[in-house]
Image (cartoon, rainbow, N blue to C red; front, side, top):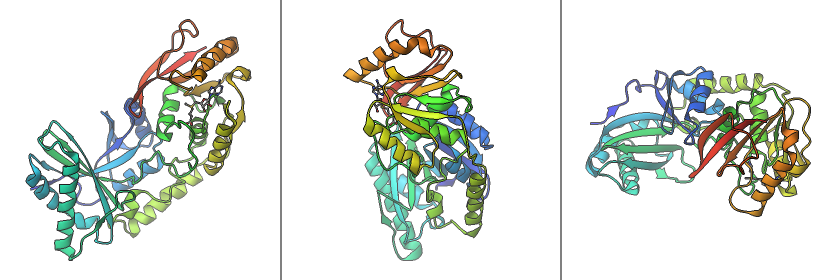
Length: 380
Ligand SMILES: C[S@@+](CC[C@H](N)C(=O)[O-])C[C@H]1O[C@@H](n2cnc3c(N)ncnc32)[C@H](O)[C@@H]1O
């Protein structure tokens, strides 16, 4: 028998949620979710938990800059083998969220369990869901791996399955404005975490001297002006579920309207620079689509002219062993005296050349996908 996660009888009751994020950004996410006035927020491995209603989960989707997915646990049961997984999944009241007209996709993770084959776990779960719906309605829903109406996550740990619905739908790093992709764009969610962890106060002017497609300046501008990161998204996953009703529609509309009303028309000066003119035009078109006020210019780091006002420099410079990495450090060395009085935060895969910069005032270990990085901050 599967056990419904306590309090999940109706989506308007308080229940647990889990917001996923890039490894190393959990504490930044926890701070952000607390600022969003969510309840019982706790950081955990790979994300943060909170308790709330489906409206709170929608608030997280609309306003979290660092969260990647908002997951709603719906059942937990022992799953030592395929039969138990099938039976436990079939016990869940899937008809609350899905009709045969809805499409679904299941993904799975397994740790320290007899069921190691995640494709098998996903298949078994999907079979149980469609069999239950066929029994209840006489028809079965279809699978759509690319763009499902209802995305389901199964997590098996120590032979126990936890089944979740993805409230967010598409990953939250897809803000709805990026069409053009630069050479190595930072995910919007990671850029937001970098900005928060850099200690920027959202008032000082900010410059990204190696801005690529503009992710850091655009995220900085939207954050400084309180523009909700999800405001440009057409919809979130929960808005495609069968349970999405008139009450939810009104509540979600009200949250979107409130978010728009709270946007500030102006913010600090935000500038992105890049030596590559194609990156600059990409950044400009991304900023336009994001309705961001960040400005962009073609310039090499060595030409950086800093204002007198203390400025925040935040960047993920070129990485690897390429020529432009060495050029970046040489150019930084050349402008080193001009950096005095400003703050610099760099997301790096390898430390800077010895002696170039003082001891960093802060260091955070983060993962950019599978790549381990450090965000180092200097008071120059
Ligand atoms: C890792 S990418 C930055 C990606 C960016 N954060 C994004 O989200 O698209 C590094 C960028 O640094 C630029 N770059 C390399 N050397 C530079 C230099 N000396 N001065 C300015 N920009 C430089 C490259 O053109 C590239 O766009």
